[in-house]
Image 1: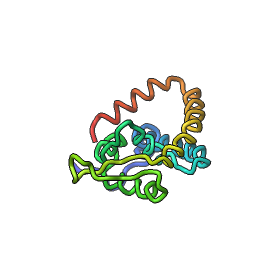
Image 2: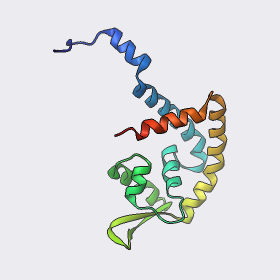
Image 3: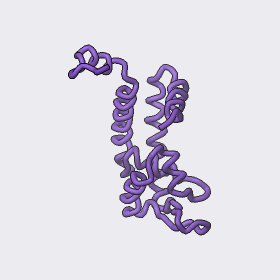
Image 4: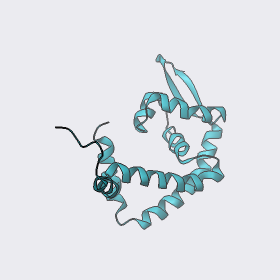
Length: 150
């Protein structure tokens, strides 16, 4: 059974109106833009905020655990760490228990940037949640989708 050479325009409309992937991507880009604008005074992007926050732990995590938390491959995470390392917000060191693994640590400068960024994040996050009919349900559904394979 072969599909037609050109999908019908009705299919385009169906995807536009119902595709969960498309709608999730659009919402993610719109949210990221809002947080990027808000976090600009702190000198970081929304993605950098998430990455720095993922390192805000009592013990430095390894690269693999941060990649898993952020649903990011290790190569992409390494590329995203480079500008933060250049700005001395993050440092990496070999894991003393496994020299092949790298541990990621916030520097004092990284902690200072986070301290500046968190009130900005809290304010915008609260405003966005207020505009939603059920933010906890949305969060739950998004968590379900993020765990459903990949």
